Image (cartoon, rainbow, N blue to C red; front, top):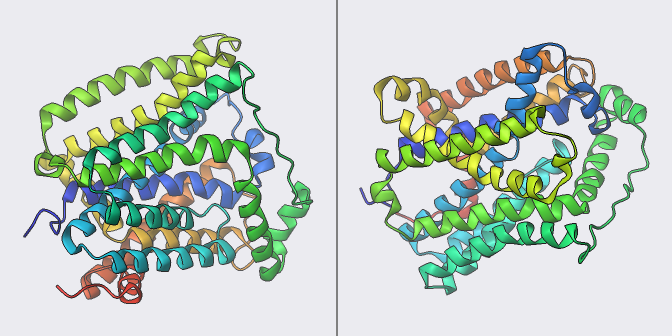
Length: 382
């Protein structure tokens, strides 16, 4: 088995973890209108509630999206190494873009598949026409630095921060009623408008997309190196883990209120928080790879590999099950559950999705949507 066709337990475990992390964040947007999130997740008198918020916002939030983007780029690069087939990768990303469009319209305005498909189309062109390995590294660094530099320019007033006014023209009570009891087609139309509205936000364009795309390009770069041949280097990951844990502790001290609110408005603090997105992603990656090197850790993480092998199916099933739970097509629990109840539901739904995908793996060797994706993209013959 060649390196490009080998299946890595660690990569599947990381991908499965990222899928769970994405669901932990996304289910909040299925459960509540965005206008209520600051109220629902406000600091609490109960330590466990604050700890849940810290995990969701400061450990998982945004980090699993960058991890998933890195893995998407790495996977694409490995496929290119295996097939060297421009048409296949092009078809694969076109099919993914249509899956993303259906996902937006029918299920969730916060879709990432269409974004990744667009990254993938750009990556396909880069893999086909760019031969220099170093180009991918420089491109990834340049994209990552875009937000960093923009933050500095905006701080000194050299570049406008941009303004945003929502064009949705719907208040929070109307939105709650729409998803609790509204017509499905009206919900679909709202999702499309909401998706387009989100993409117009300066924060999304300038500070969400660049780190995610940078990590995708880093994944392409890694696929062109010998990194995978030394993927389980414990010494390397222990070094990364030590540094990132120290950095995370420093950030946590800042974020949990041990510094003044004035400091949190400074440029230095914002730059530290931006770097934290990459640092925490590396922390999570390193922790999972190291855990996989030990028998107990490997056993604990094994269920995640099922979700990792069926990541597309898992992602769509998350939206299907959450829609049934929260929207009027099912139980209509939108804006009715507490944050704790929402996260318990998230865990139960992940268990359900695990068993559904486990059945698919046993009978088909892959997830249902993975099989469809491969068929529609017309995979090259082995």
